[in-house]
Amino acid sequence: MVALEKSPLLPLASSSPPVDGNQRYVLVIHGGAGTITRETSSPEQRAAYRKALRTALEAGYQVLHNGGEALDAVVAAVTLMEDCPLFNAGKGAVFNVAGKNELEASIMLSKPPASHPHIPATRRGVSATLLTRVKNPSQLVRTLYLHPNLVDHPFVSGITAEETGASLGETLVDPSYFYTERRWREHRRGLGLPEEPLPYPSDDTHEKLPPIDQLPKGTVGAVALDVRGCIAALTSTGGRTNKLVGRIGDTPHMGSGFWAEEWKPTTTTWFKTLLDKIHGRHKPTALGVSGTGDGDVNPSGVYENKNTNEAPQYFIRLATAVTIARRVQYRDESIEEAGQHAAKDLSANGGEGGAIILDSEGNVALPMNSPGMYRGVIREDGIPLTAIFSDEDVA
Image 1: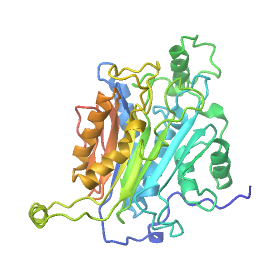
Image 2: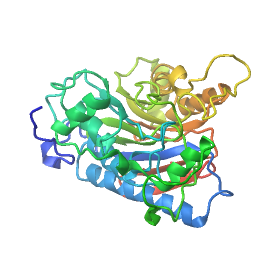
Image 3: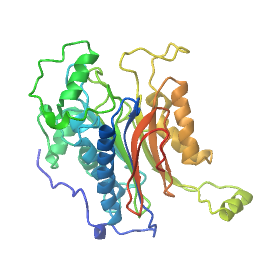
Image 4: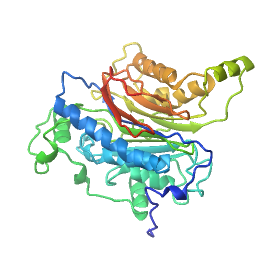
């Protein structure tokens, strides 16, 4: 395959000037949700996660602050989380039952980026799954999205995705790159197998502060709003500990684990319009969602909801991400209200998790039905706000 020039990750602001005068920009991120408690964590662990979240927020902020695209802001943030072994993505990804890492990622935009006018208006996102060699899945899906001439499908996998990305400048690594001792030990413990001998030498660099989330099921993700009013949502994951070989979760399922969309304002009554004007309310016309939690089935394979004999799919079966968008668009709900409905639906079906939601007005919602979700928000003031537990507020 002929090597092509790789699109710059962080284009200059002058290459994509604002087109609608909107000067609002926001970035919200998550690093996974689940059973995360103060009782099972140390101050040192919590400080390490907060520092990693702040670093990711600041990276994405620099893109937005300089007038860059939401697309590049989310990739900048998620790339750092993929490179941080604390999270279940990239370097810190979990192992499947065969002791291998199979990664997934997805990206979606409410409208094509202004800096790449060749992108068709109908092209909104790309997902990739069963990745075993690409160093940063987040950068891969960005690159695939920006080259519709090579990848005109919204969902690709394995060798095709990785070799196409490599031809466009993406970095491929030996699968051993993703190995971390703690994830290996979790994998072996989960199967009831001996943890040693280790397949690779022990590396104390990243083992001093084991992650708070044992046997994780989370992902990392980011949603950004740029000064052009474009919203981008990006999600990346290693999946579930000891998942079946070839398992595909909700992260690459458009409408389930992620979504971004814009729509024309809906008509409303004159009285409602007047009230909204008096109270300074503006209905959002776009949003982005990135989810984390139970995409399909719990690690034991046993369905915990006793009210049905169906196998669980949670985010996939409930189409969680797009359902949030539809409630905002058609039921006139705020993203907070729509997000809380989604969290309740997950609970009613035996699922656990959360989501980050950002709308065109710069509103942020962080619904969850779990004890914690690593998360953070940064706005125009450049102050990174982070939280871990459900009783903390950063929005």
